[in-house]
Length: 311
Length: 241
Image (cartoon, rainbow over all chains, first blue to last red; front, side, top):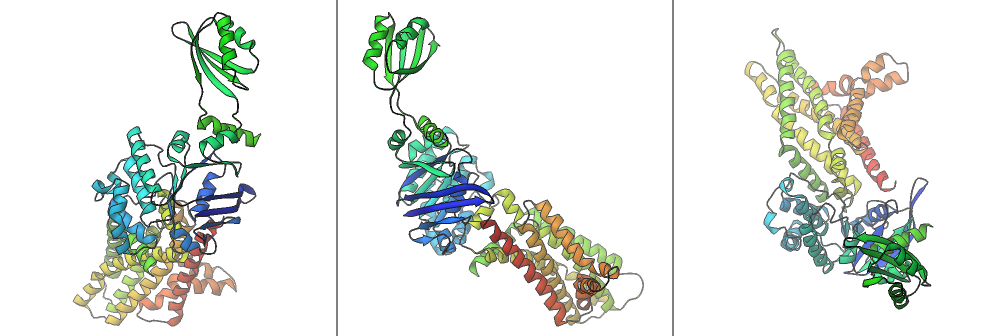
């Protein structure tokens, strides 16, 4: 269990984060979202034991960051955006070194090594020099160094940045496998990835947590209530706009021309008025080919939350 | 202690498993050899003890220069390559990190000095020197190297890149070397202070002649301790920034 209470950090006079409080349960995979400057990096550095916070407490299974700093750090695995690697070493040598650096004995690390190599799909390159590995493999070695000492919490900062689609799929498998062994906190700008791999999401804005929960919880918090639909119609633009204006509850729309004289129309309504809308269009002589309700995507939720909070 | 040795072993391996470390050793041995031939092995007749003194004088200077080059990478390179986070997020204390780094550089310096041993040995061919003078000379070189390495370790701990670390470390070492010149142009109380701080003229000179004075040993150990403590504080300060 990771507990953060009232975490505040200032760089001189500048506030980076203030009053951050959240908990993460064991074996949970949590996504950490925030715009640049939201305080994400500072929070990750504090959780990794790199920075002592100005105020607040951070504990991992009861071990306090400030009171027992060394013990706290031994329970954390951290992968920054650029994996920290000694490139002249082989994968095995490097992992053996890092495992011992994190406080484990050589025998313990040797025993753990095969499992870690398997989890990170690195067994076939374990004797290769890191310098020779591709970017994707280096990311995996970065994850391997973060888990070689069997930490309670693994922090992954942008784990899929720079990876190709195949490597992204493989990395998802690695992250899911990690979730069975320890708690994982992922920070990423790629929201689809967060949505794909995380059990829960924390949204940080202006140094504060503005929402947390599953994607559906965030959608509610983002006030994305109402209905958004996409129509495909065959008609003149003016005809369509005239029909849309006649329906109460239609807030805004935009239309994009498509090949074959078709129009793709995005409509936002304050409530579900689909029947009235289609009736109005058909009455006006518009050929309605398709009506689809838009799913609330994480991008729009995230923007709703961060814009709402900063407004 | 285990953590200190772990860091020291890896860093020492990084020196000797790359061309970089052997290049430094080759250049240092070349300089030592040239200076030994040009300044110590002169055509005029000399006492063997004087030849040995000149060897230690030259070798000490080379050692200080090498110390700056070797230490500039200790922390600055880790920052440049992003691997500092491995050390900072480990359970090792800042003091352990500093001592591990310092020890690795001293292991390298000891290897370098061991490889210069053929030069004093050559004096035995046509001359006669005491083993004690050789041992004391090397003790002095190691102590002065220790002080130089500690200064370089501190410079590296406060620098974002290796060039800056080398410049900062080099300037400080040069200051300690040239202190006796400053003493000549200063008034009391700085005159005495600078004279006593001088690495060569005051503190290392007795070792060249085979004399061990407790005050000289204490001085070099004090400089070492002071700069390693400063380096530790520099690392700790970053956690609280």
